Image (cartoon, rainbow, N blue to C red; front, side, top):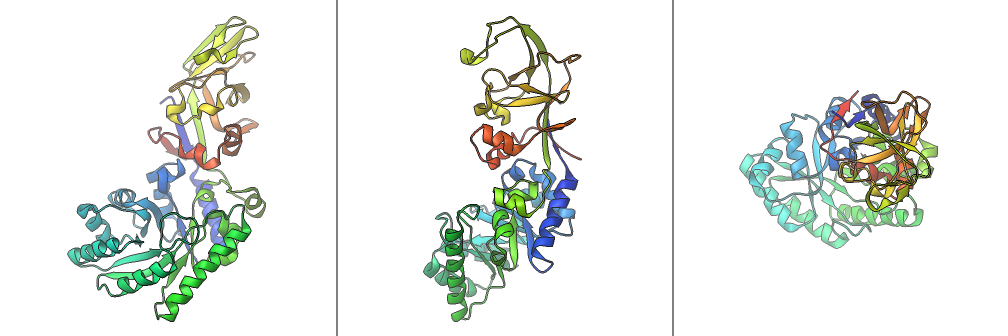
Length: 370
């Protein structure tokens, strides 16, 4: 194994506890493990959450992810947040296991009601409302109409209603606008004697910055993994990053001055230079924008990336390092001795957001849970 990702399970547990303290005992804590758990390992993180007494439900993006958790014998309630196809086998398996589904079309009501009849079990559903993110979801009048139809289905239980913030990280005015829109539809439903028990809206950022957005459940995404959605959040809660990323030197070579390095010769050595060849490239998720920009840690020292990052390789300058050899560890993200490379640091160097850096780590790279 030349390249691997390490996941600190204690960091995940610590972050869960921090949010439990923030929201209290009565609010549901629902971690989001979609997109390979934000690059941290779908099953690995789900198993940690499954064992945690702080976790009430686990959220996934689609039917395939829900089905995978059922096959992995995850016992916590599972909720799909976004989409699901009309796959009878998977739908029936998920319905039997108590998976909770979103609804934002009339067709979904028909499909799930039929599935509930087939498996002889009532399916819990949550109405997905678009309050301003302009993604999946229903506008107010549509939501009221579909809520009534759900209530008339004998195989469906309208357990919840939810929405999604567009910019809770940096736009307080629009965030408050979205909350008002959400309150309006809840009020409209209650006027028509449709009372929905579970209401959820808050993502990581909103959970930290807007207590009144908690309702009675939060969906914990990025910050589960110890990453901050914005600078203000960082001042209000302490989190520990759970991910580190490492690789191994596979070749060492010394090149003379004025040698061009890599595709396009974008870096020219100005003196005799020693290079470490690393088996990591943009296929693995090491962003090409980090070419001639980032560095790795070898023997606790900063070693700059030289030349363009390739599909499967990159080159680090180890000139001046003593006793370095093939097989030595190079840290892409994480700590070596007194130095540390953070996800946020890489995201700034790549002109990206921290979500991108972790999400794009190739899921085929082994995740080792510590």
